[in-house]
Length: 115
Image (cartoon, rainbow, N blue to C red; front, side, top):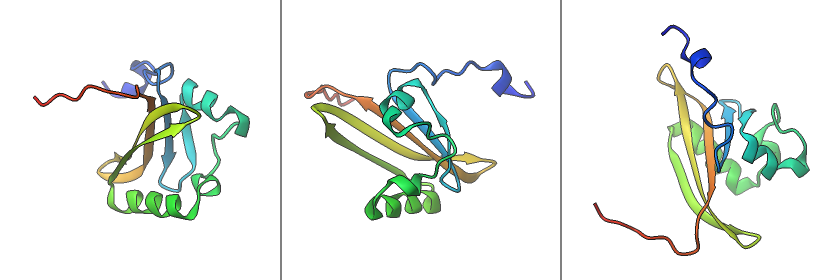
């Protein structure tokens, strides 16, 4: 198919985790419903720059991920809700084109399997 974006549904739109995507200049280009709801108190963030809402430590991590195409993964506890944050570069024609962050709620205790 020539343009799969027109054929594929917006599978991330109604996922039960927050998905936020920025371009290589750190401008937010996509937020699914859960991400928009999570940050609703900040208004519409599409078009805003990630660097404007992160501290110095986070800015350094963002720059590193963009430079290396790397991954950053960690858990947080926010208002009594435990979440896993997975941040990774996305690529276009082999070059880093931006970052994707997936934030999902996780239970306090989670099974871990070795397969």
